[in-house]
Structures are given as C-alpha cells and as structure tokens.
Length: 235
Image (cartoon, rainbow, N blue to C red; front, side):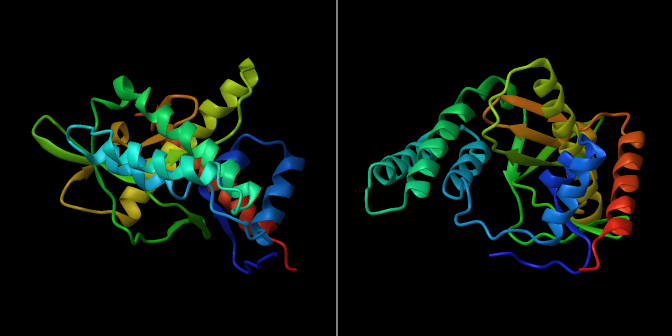
C-alpha cells in the first residue's frame, strides 16, 4: 500500500543514497519518497532494542543479546509465522552476533540511551526522517561533549572497491546528518562534537565518524535538499 507525502520528506538512508547516486537514480529516490510503500514488517525491530541495551550497559553485558537471540531463534523455526518474519529473525540474529564482533571499535565510546521522542530535522525545506539510536558522551579539554549514533543494518554484502567506497560515503553522510540532528533537536548542556556523531554499519563492522572538516559535506546536503524540494512531484 502506497502512502503520500505532499511536503518534501525523505529518510536518512534515502538521503545518504541520494548523495552517491546518478541523476536518473535520484529521480527514482524522490518518487519513492513521495509515494513510499508501506513495509509489510519493520526490519530488525526486535534486534535494535537489544543492540541499544547492550551498548548502553557500562559493562557491555551480552544478556540483552542472548535474550533477543533466544526469542528470534524460536521465531525462525516457527512455521506459523510468515516466511518474511522468519527471514528477518535469521538476519536479526546475524546482527546480534555482528555487534559483538565490534567490541574493540565501539569499546572507547560512552553510549547513553537516546530520547524516545525526537524532533524533526529540516534541511533546506526538506523534512529528514532521522532518529538517533544512542547518544554518545565524551569530554575534551574539560568540556563535556555529546554526539549521536545511528545504527544502520543493511543486507548489502557486495565487497567490490566501488561498493565499499559507496558504503563509506553513505556512512559519512549519515554521521553528518546525526551531527545536524544534535544541533537542531537534541540540545543539552553538552557541546555537540563531530567525533561523537557516527553511523554504525553493523553487518560490515564499520564505524563512520562525522569528519572534523565537515562544512562542504553539510553544504552538499543542503544543496541536495534544495534540489529535492524543487523537484518534488506535484502529483
């Protein structure tokens, strides 16, 4: 079932994809964003809370992951649920295992629970659907800082140099969107910091931090959103 967004609106992942796509592919992204298809299920719905509980635990307890895996293992073999749900359960278990393999990369970060309700991010007149899965605390030179982490779960397993470069660029754009989200919607007494804003590509075990020199990347996002708003279909 297709929905209809009359005003310009795009998801974080679609905007990141827009940034690395050809002109023809961009037209398709805009059309999909205008008339999004209602997904039959929300992918990784039951894995995401377990990942967040694991990462925000000071001791990085694996208990939330084990509980989630036991539940998903039952679903994976339950013939009374749809094949799509069983497939999602299988991929969700892979994600639970993948996050444990990222212990060294994620270990230095102080993850904190993110607010359930978060404001809308607007870039150049386009509403960007973004939700920080985690807040990230840190300090530098006596200054308390804050960032945001977005968990990205994808089934793209291509390992060509081109695919890796594309995933990296998308990850950097998602991290930059997280930085803008902090400034616009998640303000606290802490100062926003690029080094604490990140996209966590769980399946591929990669962490992409918002670059320190991010001005041009932000300008590119603003220009892209101006294009999206100008090309938004009237029908």
